[in-house]
Image (cartoon, rainbow, N blue to C red; front, side, top):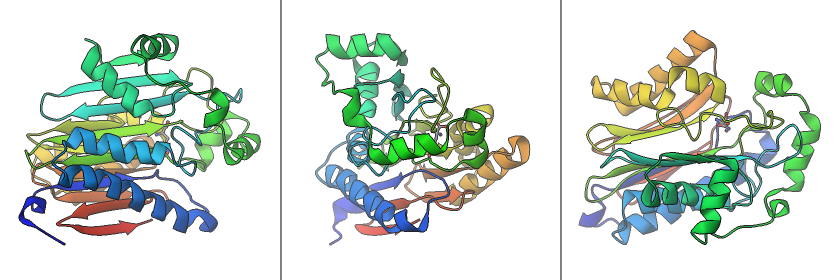
Length: 300
Ligand code: SD4
């Protein structure tokens, strides 16, 4: 199924680094495979890396299995507060939203922030106001809350308990390289169950949840946000690429550094500027999938 146009394009996605129970292993793997196919279709149709990561992330935001869009983890007070980022490696432009509700596809609103404002990040009420101003589709909060998220919320009613156990986390992310050589990265999440109201994790923070630079590569992170932010994990990994490490080594070394320095766990997907893939996680599981040369690879 491979043709010349497919030589240089690659897309890689993840569905969150956490201790996934056996019963969910297969469905999360199927979920990331479906999402990566969605992004790949965009790339082979000649779409941009930005379009491809947005499409792949939208697919997982719409899938209630993942902690992004529908199925988001709930705050201590049982609310939905979503974070997302998208970054364009061509210009280093980025758009992000944090602490938002009523939006099923936060990564698409983040893209609007990048394209329609002079800012990088909008939060909470301001982001919602912007969404209304541009006619972005809004949904009822209840649409985003699943029975599974409510169950998790009941189990993890204190923030400290949540971050220690790193249990219910399935942030989503994607990194793509298009045929023009452009790299884009995106990440979207509901955060961590029972987080404090107003808590913003790493996902929407440039250089923490995602980073992309055509000249070097791109990355999307998942895991314990407070740790990821302290080491600016995706920028750290991209920096290692810049220093000459392979994509795989950069992913491994960055996560090792995060563990050594702040005792944090997580996962990374990485592409270098020519489409070599790096995937690593220090949690028990992280569903991932990528398509390169027309072939799909996946794992969990
Ligand atoms: C956060 N990094 O808000 C996110 C959680 C995550 O898979 O990655 N879950 O801290």
